[in-house]
Image 1 (spheres, rainbow, N blue to C red):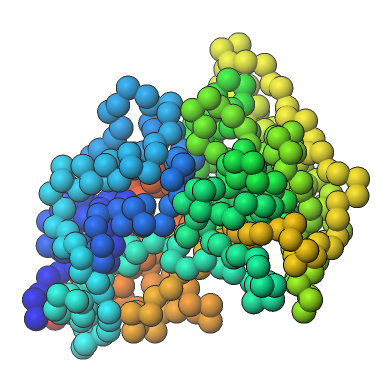
Image 2: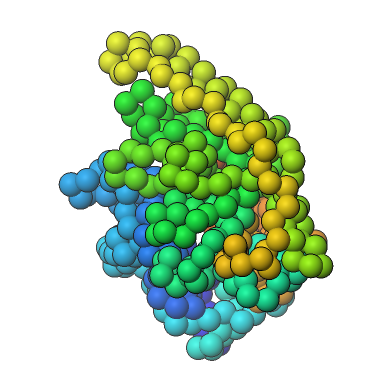
Length: 416
């Protein structure tokens, strides 16, 4: 059994950021990765996907984008290269193709069992990401024969889909991107819309992420919001990493021929999809929240004297809602050949044999600090700040949690 002070599980952006911060604090550690560096970016993304954040915002501890397109959006191969180069630059002690099968407590330490042997560590950082398994509703089992079910983790491009109609369920970032791409492939798309967060790609001449970054909205902390549980489960922005600044919202999708319907509430025994009749409600709520956000950004710009330096405020038009969207759709009629469940992901930690999981299998934590001393969580939505969701948030999270980890090690040494 090998010994080390800290084991980091996962070599994505959060695990690598933590590695850099622990190196700066002289904490010996190892990063265990079941595949290769940036494994989830390599294996669980579709071909055309780009980051939702501009290249300049891919900032990590001691590292930033140095290319000639700071306002562009990385493709998946570019993200993989970026993270791989970062790992090499910081000389991260990554052990690839090392799958963790168990993390358990032994006295005051942890034993980490892997496909390449065991490690004993005083602390463990779980940085394996929040997107492990597609969240598919239970009624998905009622899809009739002849209709293929696909999750975003399995989807690569439209060519893998049968010819014919496609029902995309979910209208957050993934749903709108896939609806756009598949509709343009010649397959008619129906998009089932529930709660969503509408934002423009560009506002007043600047990318929306510039606004959120500059105005400090992305720096809002988890302990500053009224309901952090709700904040952590909000749908992702309706955004596409578009080099030409294209806003892909429900109006745009309808313009290219996508049919929008209400939230999918269930599938009957005979294979009929049942949609909510309240489609105007989530659309109106998304428009209302968008207006409030843009009011906040306008007020911030005025307070900084920027109104003369940037474009005048032009608000997006309200979401158009079809007057009579269908409430029922017989999936066995042949109109729909594929259903794509863009309904989110859930984390899975079958190897975590430490009592920190809640009833839904999520790690209980307070800003990444779990109830079990010495066990930390990275890679979670809104972990410590709103920016935690993005690559750009990994650095702040890692700096603060590594500081807590070092303090814990000092206290532990004093007790011993």
